[in-house]
Length: 323
Ligand code: AR6
Ligand code: MG
Image (tube, rainbow, N blue to C red; front, side):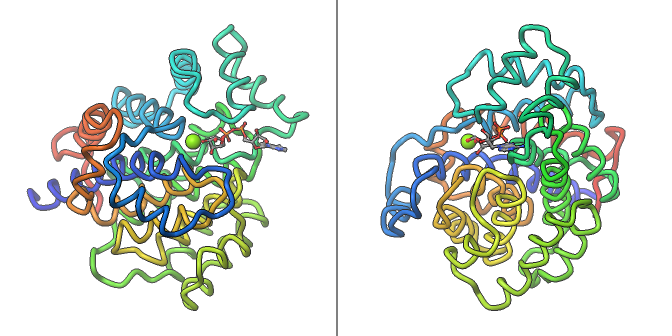
């Protein structure tokens, strides 16, 4: 029991901290053409500069604290207020335009359900903003995958009501849970993992994007290849499969997976953050490069939030760790 407890909390902390590192490492390359690999390598492995996190980590911390305080239960009204308050506190973290407007409206008293439904001419946002913050849901103890997906959708609804964005949150949360349950150094079966995630997405577009991944992994596709096949943009239907591809290409090599994610170009901070969550859930905190831990802005805040979330899984704390 003790071994399980230790490895579970190490995985929770690994996922949270590496998600923040992926965000901060990817941020300088966001929106640019795929950068020179040497430039990415220098920034990842030789720089001593501060790694500043963006809205991905800010929102992930909000969700982690929400779940910790409420022992894993989602309260949409409170979550919407907490996200809006975080945006009000630090609006300059690089939020998407729609998200920034939504949180401003909620902060002024608008009802989240209607405000989120009205976005983008009533289609709702299809951005990756709900998926980018969802890792803590995949790190809740003792949930079946269907419950992980359902809870992820509830956290997404407060800001991202487009069916593809809801699928993105469900897929990324289920992928995080599967990574946390996977056995390290035992080859990860990409086909099985993708098939399991597909069971929890509802749109044909999302399923089609996910189904491209096993073949890409089997032929050791390059970042450019993956970006060409599934895209690398802010849409959840692109960024979530791209992040999963980076993880599946290098499931036991954290720097390689995050470097792969950044090398795809496009929405590099969010793709690398989601890849980081998956890598950390599988490899745990021991695989965090020491320098990243030292360079990460707000590192102690991330560790503290992650440790509190991990304690939900402590035997006797009301829930059992899975696996
Ligand atoms: N129709 C057309 N374009 C859309 C739609 C839609 N239904 N939904 C979203 N977009 P947003 P996010 C486009 O603003 O998902 C930050 O850099 C539109 O251009 O809801 O929280 C984060 O770090 C919109 O501005 O924000 C993430 O990397 C954009 O998608 C990323 O932005 C993002 O949707 C996602 O943030
Ligand atoms: Mg960002």
